[in-house]
Length: 122
Image 1 (cartoon, rainbow, N blue to C red):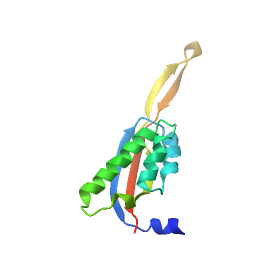
Image 2: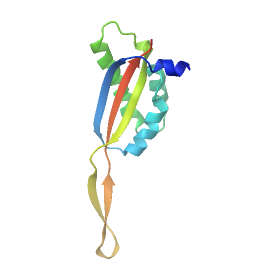
Image 3: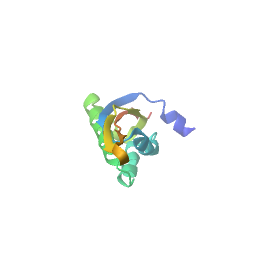
Image 4: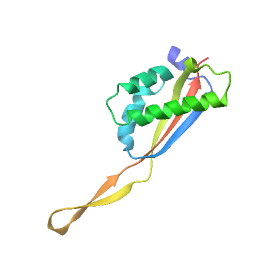
C-alpha cells in the first residue's frame, strides 16, 4: 500500500531522450528495473546494471533531476522518485547485407525515444 501512495504525487520534472540508437525492447528491460523507485536508489541500481542502456537512462534521470531543480526552488531531491518512464519506438534505419547467390537481407537498426517523469513524494 505504501507504494500506491507514492504515485499520488504531482509531476516535478520531465526529461526526454530521442533517437537513442538502441532497440526499444532492450531499453525497456532496463527501464522496468527503475520504474517507481526513489531517484537515488534508481541511479545506484543503474550504476551496477550490466546493460548498455543503463548509462543513457541514468544520464536522462540526472537530467530530469536538474530540470526539477531549475523548475522549483523549494524542492527536496531526496523525495523525488521515477513516476513514469516510457520507451517508444523511433525511426528505423534500414540497411542491407549481402547474402548468398546475389540476394540481400534487410538489417533493421532500431532507435528509441525515452520519456522520464519524476514525481515528488508527499
